[in-house]
Image 1 (spheres, rainbow, N blue to C red):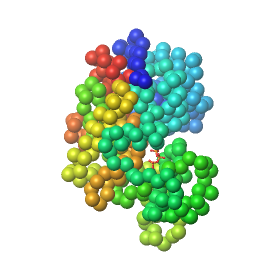
Image 2 (cartoon, rainbow, N blue to C red; image 1 turned 90 degrees about the vertical axis):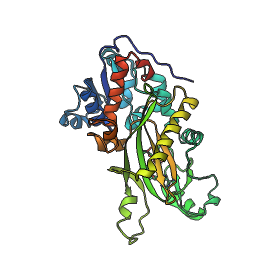
Image 3 (cartoon, protein in one colour; image 1 turned 180 degrees about the horizontal axis):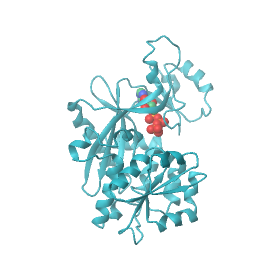
Image 4 (cartoon, protein in one colour; image 1 turned 180 degrees about the vertical axis):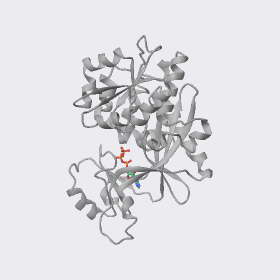
Length: 345
Ligand code: ATP
């Protein structure tokens, strides 16, 4: 069902940009400041020092639990400050995609309906397939495992708990060690170079911009490459950091086409579709074909590399343009053109 935008009076004049203190908050808040907005960070006592020491926001709200933002009292406080919330990975994880869609009355940048499509692996696959983006093969029956596969669990977040295996027997042995062995996805392990391109779709210009790109650094899969096979430690995929990357220029057409295709498909699957930042998580094989194993329909942590802009954003903008700042820029343009209802839901 299409989500409906409802912008309270007052938002056309003053807006406070707010987010949860985690993930990409430093970049989002800096971008908002650079665009002239008032800023607010919502964080726990534990994380407060990060946002204080980096001087990141004009205002701070401390919560015990991030779900506290759903309370009527807290939402009222945010509405009084004309807050626009910016969702990010931890925001979706801590508050929950369904809660954001159903219980959050505070305006949020983007289409709230998108979050469910990206956080549900089955739906994300429908989306990528509809867009004509190649996905890894999946195997329903462990008997069909004939080559290296990666086994994924719901809500693993950052690849924690995934394992790789190459036959049914080893699969069963590994599964016994898992905490939640019921719901798994067995996926072909695609060998190649990982690229995580960061896009931004503006409904105001109807353009998809490629702002930057990264590769996630994962423990211990990336560390194992340094051991030259001198250990039996199994690879795991816990994200620990991000490294910058650019693709060879001849691959850019494919990367741009993938971005355009998922935006087009999103409008069909969940109108008004994707709004703002997104990332297609891909592996480029040696035949130079891209396989996408995941889509994130919000700002991703790899964009933190580019607070001052990236080799790509510098070609589009003659000023430092992070994804966080690009979000704030979109809000500013929409506010000036009285088109906030196109980007805030
Ligand atoms: P997040 O939700 O934080 O984006 P996640 O828990 O959904 O992450 P994935 O992004 O699906 O995890 O995968 C984690 C990592 O596992 C990837 O970054 C990649 O290194 C590896 N990986 C995932 N799928 C494949 C695949 N099919 N072939 C090879 N490697 C893969």
